[in-house]
Image (cartoon, rainbow, N blue to C red; front, top):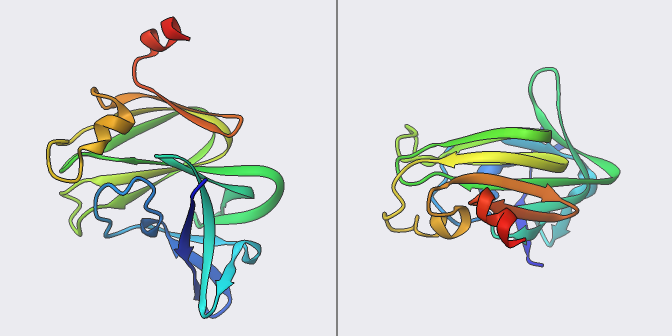
Length: 185
């Protein structure tokens, strides 16, 4: 499994955090504006003068972090805390060019963050869905896929750009056509 390293910064020289736009799992689209995610110092690794957090890539659209759980504070701040025997999964769903993403959590404990691909948001968005443990999601993607750099969307999310994502027992499965999937399994 490949590792994705994200550089960590510190607020007030004490609280480690990263911007979720740096977590580029699919490699689709530019990222401009995003959200700050605070992390427990237990996940921070050091390589010379650079501090970073390391995620394990488990599919072309998802990564995981072992012994981690995402919590939201009363003020809405997102924090990844250390919690033994739990797994945090992050699924990335980019839109097509000038498109958007709709995600519905069917079951599981998940939080959604949005990253804009341009300062005004007119060139699309990327959604990160942060799930504590197993979950099931329903997605729908809009926007052009024929534009340079967006062709892999069809490979990852199907020709119709809608379907379900199941996170179960450490695996992430994208189901484009539920009826066909049931017939073939």
